Amino acid sequence: TEPPPPPTTEPPTTAPSTTEDPEPPPTEEAPPDNAGGLGDPSSYATWDALADCESGGNWSINSGNGYYGGLQFSLSTWQSVGGTGLPSDASRETQILMGQRLQARSGWGSWPACSRRLGFL
Image (cartoon, rainbow, N blue to C red; front, top):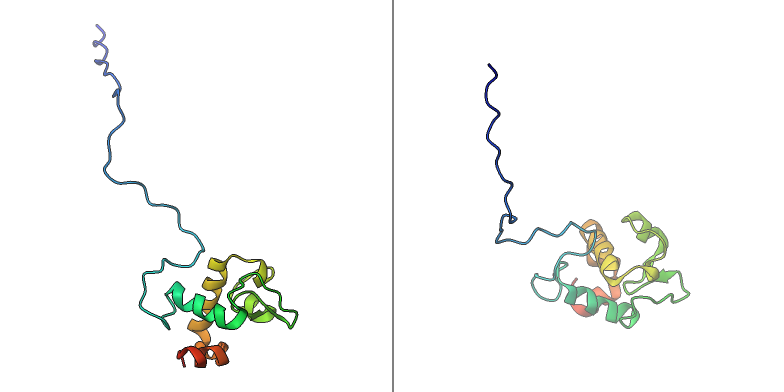
């Protein structure tokens, strides 16, 4: 004789509940502003102060002198830290990320006059 068929089970009628939201996907944006004070490269306030000095805080400026964006990148420097297109066309957050890369590589001396004026040097 044949064995009896296995018992059938009903699928759950409700989805399992979770108490945590899923993590958002990683992005190439600047890290959250949870850093120390002015002069800390992880702080948006630092980059905003530097941009205020370098470009009057205009993140989309093309000043016509070979420097672009809030942090006044030259195109060659921008590209050397992974930037694409013109710095002045990139978001504030992308410019900050590229600024953080440049600062990690070369220090605040990449912005000598404003870094001195702001007390970063």
